[in-house]
Image 1: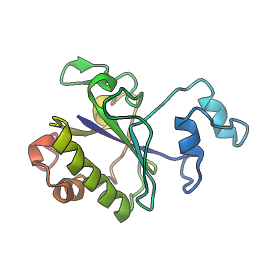
Image 2 (image 1 turned 180 degrees about the horizontal axis):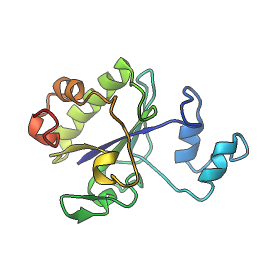
Image 3 (image 1 turned 60 degrees about the horizontal axis):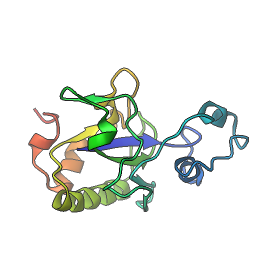
Image 4 (image 1 turned 90 degrees about the vertical axis):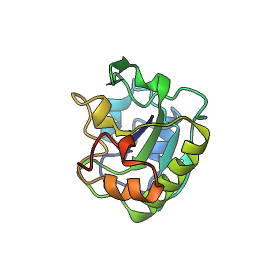
Length: 159
């Protein structure tokens, strides 16, 4: 399964390297007051897609990344054990950029050739009490059409 997330650090600010620093456990917590909330947080993602479509890989898809947190999908818990996490630079409630969809679609098309992916979900789908990302402005239909994966992989979002 692929889990789509959104992140920006500080929230709503784009274009810095703070997210990359966070995923590499190198975030300067004194750089912004919000970062104090993240002092003990250990997070990693397989991929990160910046607003302009730049793709950065942090963890091999053959290894576990720590992106899902406490989560479950179809009665299976610990989604980190069976998913690939993709973070989009953004904030739930805000729209994403066309280059991000292009990169995401291309990446996911490639991933389906190598891995037995059968579901594309948002973080809100696997941890609904805790998370809301990527949010209501994420265009699932555009993503599905551009990556060419069957609608059945998308939790009946198009009914």
